[in-house]
Amino acid sequence: MAHQKVQDPNYEQRVRDSFARQQFMATLGASVARVTPGEVLIAVPFGAALTQQHGFLHAGVVASVIDSACGYAALTLMEPGAGVMSVEFKVNLLAPAAANRFVAVGRVIRAGRTITACQDELRAVQDDGEVVVAIMRGTMMTVRDRDGITD
Image (cartoon, rainbow, N blue to C red; front, top):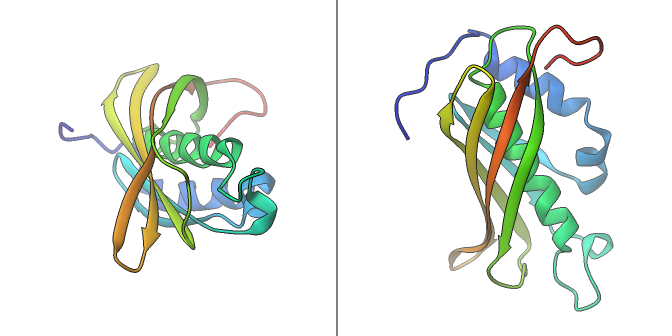
């Protein structure tokens, strides 16, 4: 990842405040673990209510968490007042999501004026280390001057 230019000195608080307004992430028990320019980590604990029929973390949960991590990574590099929306993403599920805790690591590959390319890994955190269980490539759009869409 090339050096990323921060346009909002309050990017970290802005990301944390926006994340706190996401009711769905609260439903999943997800939390922001780290915010740096061009990178956001979101942690989600394992819970039986989040599983599919085989007892693994559901792919819908996986996709939601890594999409949010990428979106917020993109937001860290946007100017104050801009909002972020996902345009597209592709998720590859690499292994069953089995662990007590998961961490999504969203990173900006390239930030443009309107379009930001991102990548993410969802890692299953275990006592003996971490296993990458999913990866994502996504495109985020900077939204400006649209009623109701900021942060």
